[in-house]
Image (cartoon, rainbow, N blue to C red; front, side, top):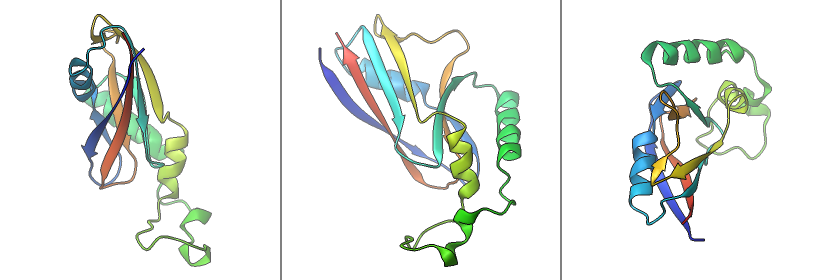
Length: 146
């Protein structure tokens, strides 16, 4: 069974933003000889996440409000006490809230491929969540099957 590794790059902006990466994933699948199998979609960052859900504007706003309630940026977090931490990178951000939000979501999804297409439901899309930003982000995709 062949295994093909590909990457998707996502340019994000500040704060919580949600990107529908379904078209990019479909393009990756179309570029391979695999017609039946699965694709692993994996976010390579600790302040991003993935989910399968509906990509509808008002729902996206609801999701953002919900996430901000779970981990408000204005709360005090030990991770943000940069002066007390050791070995921090020079570009470190005060982003504990983003890490906590990411923990409430997934960092990967496995989606079946049937007849060369994602086996998503009618209203399902693969959503990439930026919880920090702005950055160039990488999503690793591993396609396997026949």
